[in-house]
Amino acid sequence: MGIIDGFLKGVVGLFNSSGFAALNWQNYVMVLISFVLLYLAIAKEYEPLILLPLAFGMLLVNLYPSIMGAPSTEFVLESEYLKTHDISTQSVQYATTVINGETYYNVPTYGGLLYYLYQGVKMGIYPPIIFLGIGAMTDFGPLISNPKSFILGAAAQIGIFVTFFGAIFLGFSQAQAGSIGIIGGADGPTAIFVTSKLAPDLLGPIAVAAYSYMALVPIIQPPIMKLLTTKKERCIKMEQLRPVSKLEKILFPIVVTVLVALLLPDAAPLVGMLMLGNLMKESGVVDRIAKTAQNELMNIVTIFLGVTVGATATGTVFLQLNTIKIIFLGLFAFCIGTACGVLFGKLMCFFTGGRVNPLIGSAGVSAVPMAARVSQKVGQKDNPTNYLLMHAMGPNVAGVIGSAVAAGVLLSVIPH
Amino acid sequence: MDINNILAAAGLSLEEKFSISLTTLLTGFVVVFLVLILLIVVISVYGKIVYSAQNKSKEKANEVKAEAPKAVASVNTAPIKSSASGISDEIIAVIAAAVDSTYGAGNAKIKTIQKSSPISGRPVWSQAGVLDNTRPF
Image: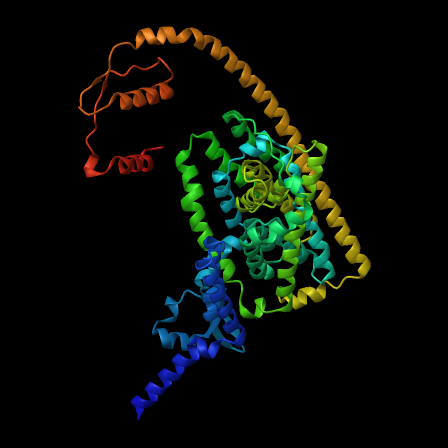
């Protein structure tokens, strides 16, 4: 009988510690959502580099929530501890607490794997490192040869602030509204950086929304671009950009860092790392570290960022009305950003006497290089001999700087 | 912290909501544009300075170069020996061009071209990759 009792106790213990007993219905719904995201990442290749680890992090945390568990202290009765561990009082190193005359050991328990990896997100470390890699991959040549592109990069950030307005009226706090608005910047690392500082509770829904819309750029942007432009405008051919010398390219990251860090210190981590990466690339003297920044380092951090941001999307946090609001507000921010970019493109077209194709304005949202490719594709539909890609890359990379500057503004204006 | 608690704490009056939203909208709009316009000005100015300075130096270099080719031609007239058979004149020309572009025209002279033996049986591109990743700082 003793053996059977032991066996039954073991089986019951196993069941009680298994996911079947510990999970609630929200966790199972999240598991299904993670399957959908995995499908989109693998079969449809929607931003797979981030969506795949993100969806898997979501899956893991909803199957085993303790994987994101924070370290804590457990109070264990002294006599029980000594009995279980078969050691003397002198050998125990833990501090003690006396409650109702009984002595308890303060035994620390370690956090889950993803809790520790998540510290890089929480402390705002991963997004700037990703920016370092982006900087090492980006050619700012088109922007240097046509600095007016900065206007389009700025215009596309208007969506961020308009959405802030909307979010406040939908009942979100200032900090939350700022985090939601930044989705309109179409820049994943920036969105995560701002949210981790302003509203870490919303990290999961905001990251999912930001990366989903970045993946959906080719679907969301073209109708807005066509709606706001005439065929004649879309057919405008732009003059070839002037060549940019190596010295100009080397000076650019230094000048931008000095100016932005002085004017907006809160944007310095993002812009500074972006420009450091770019200086590594353009200087040509540190090829090996530039390669590491754009490949190995960025890939490692992308895995950690993706999986831990996904792991913040637990059922109880994600399955709320607010998530739906965030998804819609994010889409709104994105559309307004695109529209403002195109409208400012039209303004530039007007003031330059028709030398600027307004389609490059939509590339001001910083989804690089997807948004620039969309400008190229939409332009080529109406005029197959039109090559807008390099012209659109200017506003596109200006958008990266613009969204980082907008992030700096939000962080300095909103109390947190 | 629970999201609903934060939302409850955010209970603002309509007037407060308007004032906060408009302040942020205006500040964000103005600051982002001002910073980026400042960048336009600075980059345009230094771009023009660097571009014109480099154009001037290029013009000077072109004037010098116009005389230089004769001298270079007289130095490099000796035929290059290729010790391994099968190296075509085109390959020799490409190698000579690469050497010229690295050291500057006329600063280096190629005497012989030899086929290297592969290190530990690796193909040439693998060797280049290994060298690239193992060369000391």
